[in-house]
Structure formats: structure tokens, C-alpha cells
Length: 239
Image (tube, rainbow, N blue to C red; front, top):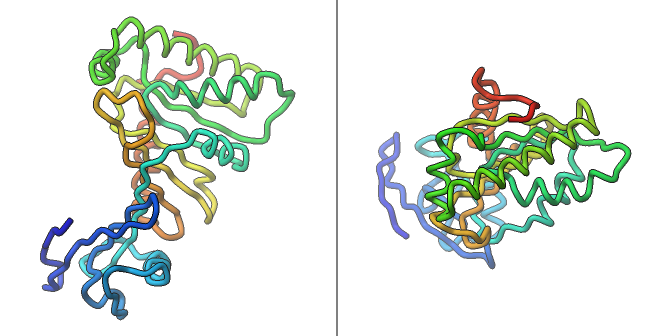
């Protein structure tokens, strides 16, 4: 993939893609001096690590390495949830995540995590578009989302102050999983939505680390917070 553009300082930047197992790495300005360092293509792991260590915001000369994965593993997600103090989750219906969490947590006496769910309003207008995108009847999608809502309600009642949830009348273009957003080692997964795609694998999964991708991490975190704080969001009650 070659895409040529002019940087803010007159440099001719070239975007290249390198492959490492299941990871696609997109590196801007790799053929020029980046932060006073020269990099050659294809990028070896040591150069990728060096670029990842740059915490500057994107600019005409700053390069950020963004990891793209095509595998999405819910076991991995739930291991990260279990290991985190705070988790923010945003998605369409969060069906798999909610069901796995419900089955695990409903029999526990206490949990350590603070988990906030933001997902689509089963009674809103956007669910019709979601059903069309999924290729499923609207009534079936509404029914599933109502089940998800009731399970989160049950967990919130069992663990007051630990489980929070809201719903929004909006069709999200991605799912977000944000682990420990207030800590320096925070991670953020952006799982891009697909057209009539039932499988979670194969769709782009963007992995962001707060210490390496501060600009984009804060961008998606701010998106979550703005949607969460909308006055129209329905919070912690049954529809």
C-alpha cells in the first residue's frame, strides 16, 4: 500500500505496510528522518519499538506505529477485564461480553473491577439500521438486546457501585474496550464493525497503548466519555 502526501514541513512522506505474523504495522514518514532518526524499510522489530516509544502527538514529522490485528479473542478480553481495576466498554449489544461476564460473575460474592457498559438502546431508532447491517430481523435484534440489558441489570443489582451501564440511540461504527484508562499502562481496543459479518475475526482490531499512542488513546476515550455523559442516555434501569 503506497499513499504519498506532503508533510507540514515540506517532506515527502510515504506510508508503507509491513507484516509481522498477524499484525499489520502502518508507519508514516519511514523513508525520512523521523524525530532525528533514520529508518529503512521494511522496518525491523527494533525500529518498530523505537517508533512506538515516541509519545508525541501526530504531526507532519512525528511517526506513530498503530498495530492492526485481524484476530479478536473474547478469552483475551475477559482476561484483561479480570486483571483491570476499571474497564469501559462500548458496543452494539455487547452480547458475547455480557453473556460471558454474566455466567462468570453471577455466582461470585464480590468483584474488584469497576465496569461501565455503554450500548445501543433496544427501543431506539438506530437499532433498525443495526439490524439491517447485521442482516437480521429487527424484532430478533431488539429481543437479544433486551436480554443483554436484563443481565447487566442483574449484575448491577448484585454488585452496586461496581457495574454501571447506559444505553444510547446510536449505531456505533466500532466496539471499544478500554482497560485502566486512568493508569499509565492503559490499553484500548477498537474493533471496527463489519457489513453483515457475524464473525468477530477478520475485522480490523486497532490496539492502542496510552504511553505510546497518547493522542489516539485520548481521542477514543473522549468519544466514550462524551457519549456516556449525554443527558439522553438511559442509565441503570429496565426499558
